[in-house]
Length: 447
Image: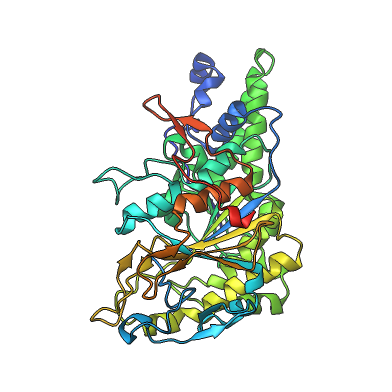
């Protein structure tokens, strides 16, 4: 399923020819996909080079426990260390949780940051902080995004590229990333994400009601009719341009490139099985989502975000982790192995994190609560220096012990990989130039 989640306030369907002749070609300029594509190209920087790089974000929505994943504390008191044991990894002296044996064997292809911390303990504020780089004012934390998400920034900066696929795609639904993780915000709906669901197959294309596939086809037919009426008097070339963008929009959501990238049946059965076929949450198979992400970046998508939700373990963390760990381990390990095996490890950077870590002390419900004061972040590929652990936490995992880092440093690292200048600014609705990141430095150990 490929879905575009931009807004649409007007469209040209049902317009009378007399009205069209009165308002001219600009009467077609509603917030429809073809016009958004036109805006993108018109606003692009001509001749600006773009790096052939991509990012896959694995978003662990809810906030994963660092203790039960990448920063176990076996020497801490029992109420801190949790129910699982550490295991050795391919990196001498480095241990991670026993629930991640496949990742332990490929840790030379990954980098763990154990000393990331921030101050946002609410889901809404933390999600927005980590996915935009900006703090949000009070009373907006659970509401609309005020700043564009990383994927939207990538779509904006790379809008000059004429592709058969969009630059920003999320899996498995647009709701997760537009409403919970972030869309275009003040950049506009042109930079909201498309969405792809591996459960729907290559032909199950879905668009929002405002711009269904049939209405997009009707629009194309209408433009053909208007062509015959106006092309001989349209000295500006607007009609020809509108035809081109309508064609691009139609091909983007229904074309062969999208169908091929979405068609997981093209993968050998053993590959699909290696990633994992089991559904984890709401019927979504995490492994197939990660496999689809690999196919999309390989096909040319710049930023793919996969929503691996359900890590808000306030109670019974042992049971919750046992219910998801095997699927998570298989999906991540298979993705990283695949990127290296297919020669994509320099082009594609994988980022794995959630909005915060979990409390060092196990609570009365045998779970862990929100804890932004320490969290683990994992990176893989991107041509960066892998096979290392950056920073550490104290004996109980309460706070960074050395090399404290902020989420914006992680984002600065991502933008550097993408070749995007974080000081570049875009104008918000108030007319103010807003830089891509307000602060943050790429993590030097990775370069």
